Length: 272
Image (cartoon, rainbow, N blue to C red; front, side, top):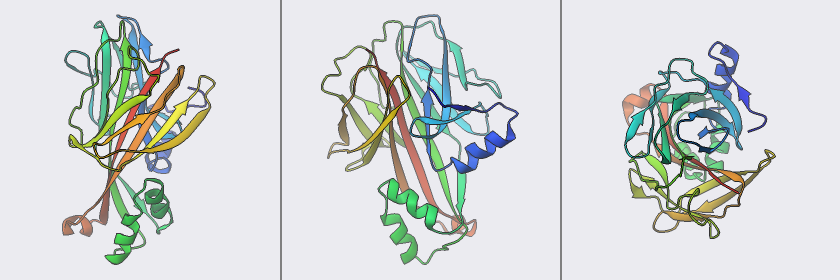
């Protein structure tokens, strides 16, 4: 993972970048490698950025709602304040480890419509800008609250097993195991909101080669909320989808909050 910027727990400047400049970008779980042996210390990072490049965030309880992995059962992270990478644990169980991260609430305040317009256009939610104007909502200094729902698939030992839907607000579920199944026909995934399929949802795919170069393309989920991601051996993959929701509560409006976004991410690797 070349060109990665790293934050230390004492780096106020880097934290400022992570909480403001990169707040409209993806947040994903990443690792220097996606295949470990039983008994290895597994290190998983929280990365905030774009195009598979970003800031490596330390573990802070004020930002983390849930952080765990599951092979046979759910195992909570034992992370301590300031840990970098955010997850560092020895795993003694073989199988497909499904790592899950859910953030606590965070906010971004827009000063004008330019950045908001660019955001909803990128995430295939241009209807939101039209609704904002139709509702005569503020066009300067209005707030969007957002949550992150990120998963990663990592091979421990034999890597056998299957992904599952954990019931996140918005979530990708892999329908094949990239470490044990034939990926020739691609990686089928299901995109859900509270376990219900998201139809015609935009899926942004970031494909990272071993030299760090990244290819980006987009897919659309079908009537079952499914899509097949074309994959290549020796590449890492990050899938991204954003659900944009209109906030109608007047109490939220009194605090300047008019929109909510919920971000889903899934990372995995396809071995050589």
